[in-house]
Image 1: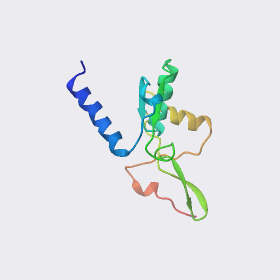
Image 2: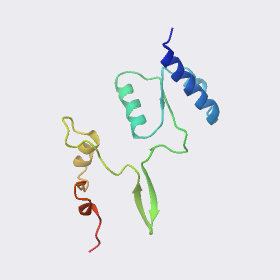
Image 3: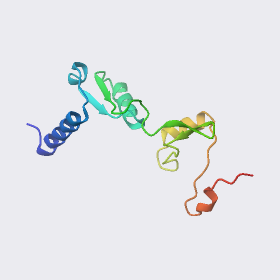
Length: 125
């Protein structure tokens, strides 16, 4: 028998899905793992599970696209990134894998100095 908190969480998820109009197809209903959200965390969780040998995974996304906060938008005729702009955790015991990827791709990076916010302000020359 499931614990009371686990049963409550499962019931809440069921209510959310019923209220959102999401229809779980036979594939989702028979999966051993359902990942909620196709943002960076959801996709990373599904990949980690797949790498561990779990293959019957379904990712549910409420929106009409994947990517979560990561998206492009037009700004003064240019395509700019909107959302997920910072890479957190670059000076910890373990390196953030996104930072490793950015370094490998030789992307231009900037340090955010929150002790001196004026140094983070973009100034056009």
